[in-house]
Amino acid sequence: MVYFTTFVAVCGSHEFGTCAGYSSPTQDAIVEELGLSTAEYSVFGSILTFGVMIGAITGGPIADFVGRKWTMRIASALCVAGWLAIYFAEGALALDIGRLATGYGMGVFSYVVPIFIAEITPKNLRGALTAVKQAKILYEHSWLELQAWSYWQKALACSKFCPLASLIPCAVLLFGLFFIPESPRWLAKTGREKEFEAALQKLRGKDADISEEAAEIQVKGFKYIETLQPLPKASILDLFQRRYLSSVIIGVGLMVIQQFGGINGICFYTSNIFEEAVLYSSRLKSKFLQVIVTAIGAALVDRAGRKPLLLILGTGLVLGCIVTALSFFLKVHDLAADAVPILAVTGILLYIAAFSAGMGAVPWVVMSEIFPINIKGVAGGFATLVNWFGAWAVSYTFNYLMSWSSYGTFLLYAVINATGMVFVITVVLETKGRSLEQIQVAINRE
Image (tube, rainbow, N blue to C red; front, side, top):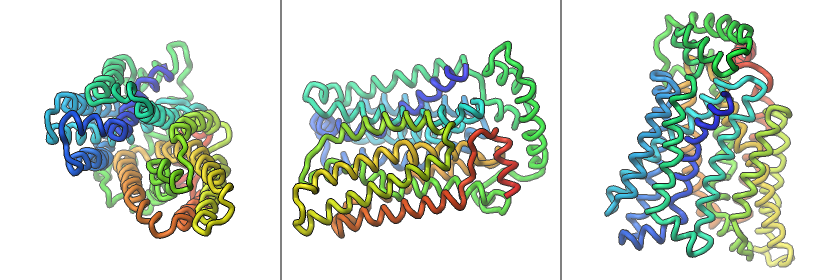
């Protein structure tokens, strides 16, 4: 039941991947079909980010109020409405409304899916199953990129195919939600003790002994909740109280490092980077490398631990940036021309591989584990908002930085990633093998 429930929830991440990857390979088909100007298509492509930010900041409070399952239903319904608006669009306005709706659903899914998976899984599987979300996103993004690599496949990626194909995971999710239980910890938080026990029993199996796990959630969780009952409902400003500061710094700090280390600039402009390095290489290979390595990272996160994985692969991020910077330095100064393309490909692929298994997936795992139950909605929404703002900022500034200095850009990213490793060593708490309740006890002690 845990695997089936995770599969249903991860269908939300399918929407995440298809929404993010939709606009690039379909641009020519949409512009030709609807006669859009460059400005109109730019609005269509970029308005997704605004929807995501709104969904990120509101998804947490909604999940706390109506539950994880209903939040996924709401996000799915908006994605369905958005894709239908895009499918039936006859002009720019309908496209933009549909894109905004799917973006909002993306923002909600980016928070609620990892939180829900973390709350339903046993502690020994939590990291791996939460990281599956990232692999699913990358797979769907890669599938859409594939459509642009041959004429007939690109025709399949036109605006009349992808919206309909993207309705399938929404249907699976909406149907599957009738058969999976609500998060036991959310039920515990809202005081529904009988439903809590029934949900936990369903997840662990009808013959499983849940007494020990239920007692841990009840004794540590309920007592903690009781101390929070007199407190007013959490707001953004409450996140900066001393009692929450450690978890907020860890969760938000990892999201800042994840994005400002340069991933979105590098991945969005991989082809441009290879062209600049005098080599046009298939970014498709880098996309599927992400999928494969992320899957490997998901298998290791519960064995190696969160911090060791971040530190070992953080070294790969720094080295990848330095090698890429060296390739551009040689190109700018007309040195060792034969080595330039080899260094560029090696550096970029090393960076992407290290990011996919480490900083790409692990911060979402930690974010789903680190926040106390009473601020999880607000704090998770805030961390997700910071993540998406960082994604926009890096994507927006990347070309300006490359114009300033190609090798300087990658040296800057190397410094940021090295700083991130120091942050992981000094601030981040290891959550491997601990229940969510044990994590809160450890944070409060520190």
